[in-house]
Image (cartoon, rainbow, N blue to C red):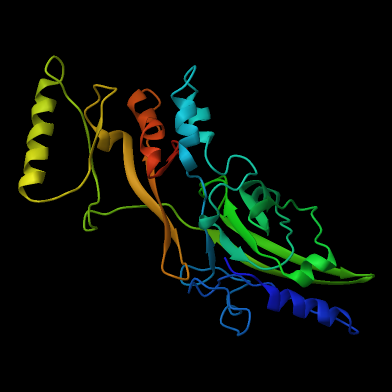
Length: 299
């Protein structure tokens, strides 16, 4: 995030003249920085393509394992409740480091985008949710605003394409100036087998049950140690389902940042409600990743 004193103060100064102009910007050239002095972010501010256009993240992690703890306490939540609990489920900002910066006063006209997107403005060290009907006072504009945007969900076919147009309005008496910028939520990508491994996942075995699985896990750990490969070896231990590859898929989502990519690791649960072991990715793997369920798509 960066403060926007220069841009918003300039807007107020222009406001004292006969007319004024609104200029809203986001990181449209994907260099991780919002350019308010030059024109590097102007070309694609109203467009979005695979090569250019501002990107923001679905901020659906589980800070401090709030949801994981709830899932393991009291009556088990339903699959829908388990998947719906995450950092962006309400209007509290728990992980501001995963927001993308935008500049100005906020309005999102499309109801589908408004439902899936959160916008915040910063007051001291607190991030305040900003609804469509929020109006910033002239003094707030003069002092400068720090704003951020994130999404409540990843894009889903037939539900939301992840594109949002954020509109900026300033009014002085009868005179109004408007500008907008287009953004799109980062896609959810799966890893391919040429990318470096950082963790291994399997199912635990024991002497009285899944004996052969226990032998496999023991030998796997021995081989990792012998090869001096220090990957964590996570073991699901609350189920006899031996095939993690069938009920989860590792992935990630990422956006440009000023010091390099800002990424969230994700475990995708398959749409197989009958495989109860899939619930464990929400219960135990959220310490370092966030999780979501991909439903079955209609044929």
